Image (cartoon, rainbow, N blue to C red; front, side, top):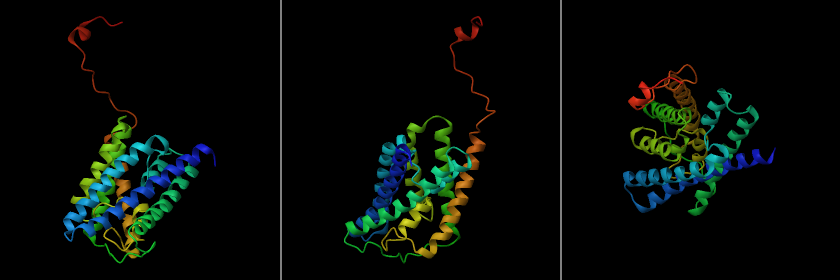
Amino acid sequence: MTHTLARRASAEFLGTAVLVATVVGSGIMGSLLSDDLAVTLLINALATVAALGVLIWAFGPISGAHFNPVVTGVALVRREMPTGEGALYVVVQVVGACAGAIVANLMFDLPAVETSTHVRSGAGVWLGEVVATAGLLLVIGALTRTGRGHLGPVLVPAWIGAAYFFTASTSFANPAVTIGRSLTDTFSGIAPQSVPLFVVFQVLGAAVGAGLTEYFYPRRGVRPEPLDLPDAVHDGPVR
């Protein structure tokens, strides 16, 4: 593995680890600070949005800041990255997510690994994962296809933060994060038996989001918008 690839993989590992540590840790802190579930969810969402924005800004220039196997998977399907590199990304994302959950547990004097008992299931919850993941992939696709990737640290967390509150699943939208959150029996946890279907519907959502990206922001055959030029330029001679 080259030094450059190792650096990219390390960025994906660390970014995913910190993201999950934030999700789990802020959920634990929220539960300690308040018995009100709305307050706890708000604390959890605000911390996640803030950390995700920083992580995308810090690691985007290095690895693209995927932190998510379905984001990497879509890039692989589109042949935007080598297969071996994509597979490595997915592995380090999952391992990083598990490490992040363990760190969060230890910070609050909990067992390093404690299997979650929080069952999350039902048609509404699964539909929420489709919507959250599809929206995430569409936002990312819109940013990259329009050359506005610099807005990623703002718009991607904005979508995740909004989806925390308008989806029944509270917007996991990430298979690696889902797996990591199965290792904590706290506010943010998810029971292991709920993980497989969450991942299935996240993959389905990613496919929907990728399809919407191709529909709204096609790679080729797009007629450019006319430039808003002064009248003097329009009326002038063609050179």
